[in-house]
Image (cartoon, rainbow, N blue to C red; front, side, top):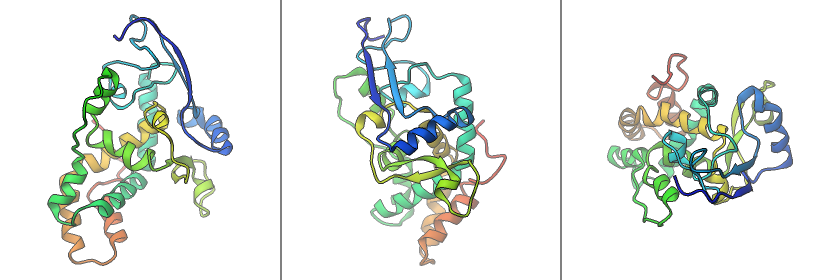
Length: 245
């Protein structure tokens, strides 16, 4: 707990367009996506353990964000995030691997494995909530923020992203407007879907992916095909039975 002097903090969860505001509102029930406006409500130590709009707790969300939505995440929220994750796993896997390949020192197995593992050291800030978040910012706790959210990736209905589709399922979308630090570190359910999609593919199969990519890149010239095949065959992104334990 961080004291009982609570404040109300209202901020924008993402820097998005009016269209995205409307879309998230329409689909908030269907996909469990949080509205893009984030309302952070401070409470007493006993109720929420948060102050100055900062939240503390023991579940995974508290290790990934500094700011929480107006209510504590529930088991239903987590189930909805996993449901969405299952639908976007391949898109997330391909996007992450494509980013790693561009950033890798080389396409050797060791260099690729280092990026997939996502180990980083962060200096202490003196702010308990921030330091707790940074101490856990490795692996997919790091990837889903640095490679996806911070780069402007969000979710939209597939029919708005892919001209060949007319359904309302979620699809990964790259927005040119990148969010600010407050938005990146604020909990929203759709962000959890990105995290879980990363966990179920890149994190769970990191060793096999690094080995396969390094071997395939030595023989192939089309990196996009190699990455797509890696996500399907080694990260098993499209497998129906590929569910978290």
